[in-house]
Image (cartoon, rainbow, N blue to C red; front, side):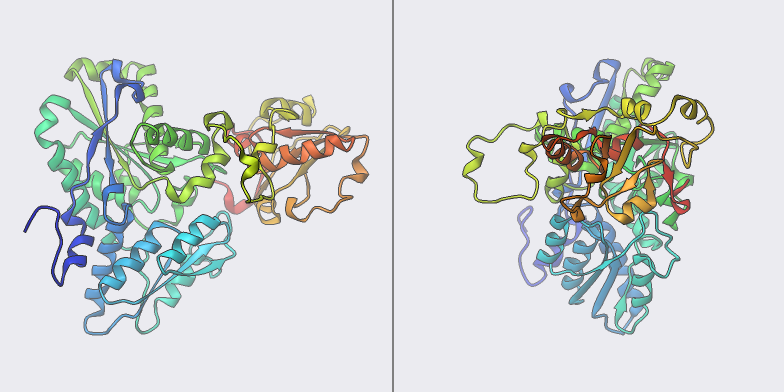
Length: 486
């Protein structure tokens, strides 16, 4: 058969089989590698070149094969999983190719409209769940628990990506082996020493790192997580990794935390150079940069490079940027995007037009806001913990949190008054006329928009730049629900 041609009755099953595809391993160009002059080479494993465009399709295949073997002669008709993204639609497509017609996904109430449409396009029946920000998988209200219980019905199967050992196993058998086959003959020249990937369900990380360490024991496995209150689709925070049933900690040699802004802007730089990868890939690359900088600061990097002449790292890039387009405009600086000429000709109207928002006009940076909001004496007394601090709000200020009630209940600033932006009444701020008002939202967009409107109406209003994401990114004090604490 001709290379990369799939035909005949089993063409689709063969095409969807990841064993039929060797995805590229591409060296990061010099202008994107800040450590090139230090003797470091960085290679990206581009899983966007898989038929379904994402690494979760490999996990989905392994779990489905395991499920069909367990079912034996009992036919399966419905898959159910707690997933709002790549795993869900990969299961849907691969399930149909294996004779399982239906896919049902429990998804968080915070799932973006873009991802909902993606699931609909792939024929996934989505069930929105009122999910806690820091859910407990054993909580009967959690999507993980509900999917597991539904999977117990006859003819149903819950792959359970969080505990199913077929998830890491297929990455050991396939992805890890494929990477090693690609670098094995180059190792004497490039000295591959670091493997880096984001930590989500951790199946990919465990399988690949175990295989690489089995071939070369001194491989350093670097896991990357997102910072608290910094959304990045797929990867988890340290706290959320507690949901995972795998022994991922035994495979991790080091960890890095990355913010939403850093992840999305790193992804943007990669995309514009032809490496079309998404925010979780940007997060992994940014985490590697952080790790290399720490090595450089301590002198460890120089020692390793002097020993071998070079140090090479491999970063797994799980998917592309397409499902996350809206989020890039939330987390990246507006100055990074080209302007649109004659935009007024477009027929589409938005509730908030980003072009109408000047975040800096009435913006106040996070550290200045912290100093202005709280009394000096109370700030000096915050010594032991960033959570639930004993801060005192300055009496002449009003701090208003514009996020949803659920978001406010899980984490908010001391002394904040809650007003849901989407439910604001025209007279909502009348009682605060004459006082100085400070607005906070999740990313700084809604608060900047409202600050402009209120200042035009004669109020004295400022907006915290970057919102709660930037506040949390700096580790500043905030009140956090008990279940969300580390």
